[in-house]
Length: 272
Image (cartoon, rainbow, N blue to C red; front, side, top):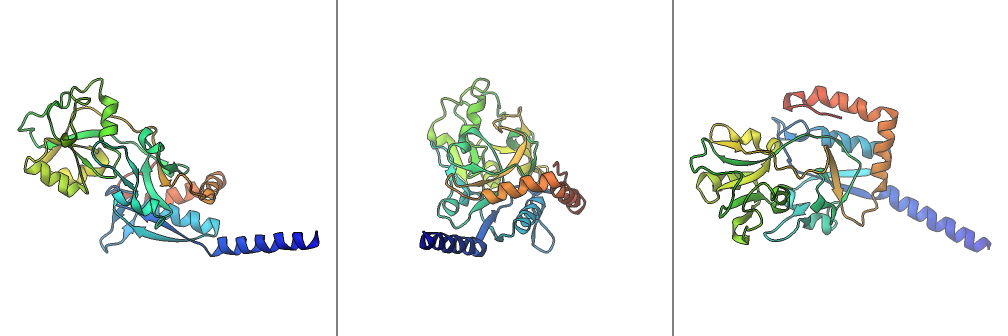
């Protein structure tokens, strides 16, 4: 009996030591040029997501490192398929990706943390300024639509509007084009390789300038007005949620949010 108790204590101490020494990798991507995430004049990644992640790790007594990745490292999507975890998340090179919205399709293959902040945005089509080719956002029959790989404004998002947008259900795989970033999509639109692309307004508004514009009504497909971090379905990162909830209860979260509003207000509004 004594030896069993001693053995259990030793195992418990080893597990505790292992947990204390574990390093967690939290992934960042430039989800928007806004107060949540942006690159400052010195080339540093800044914003509320990074501030909050650092505070949660510090409060929890965990060792965290931060890695900048492309969005498709966290979530990827191909024509005719559903979105799923990207290779960095699946391969465990990163433990969590900061700053993602929740959709019904994403819930099938990903886990979500406690919400990081409130979020409001619209999902809209983008066309050339003045809509020279008369793209009709209510009838996309035969049109080639671009999507950004890893971003939720994909074919499954567009299906939410199938009852009011003609041609969604009849789209062929070659009409559903996924590219790795916004610059490629904008260039494809500029040179008429696609008729339009679907995006989140806050994601692209700084790129529009006088050359492009939004058209049509909000497609929707965001499940709620919050932004989260994502993790693998089998992730054991319960400490992140537990700590974030405790910080909200103690007021530390709101104090941090107030400070972030002052530091990042030149990039837009943060709603806690």
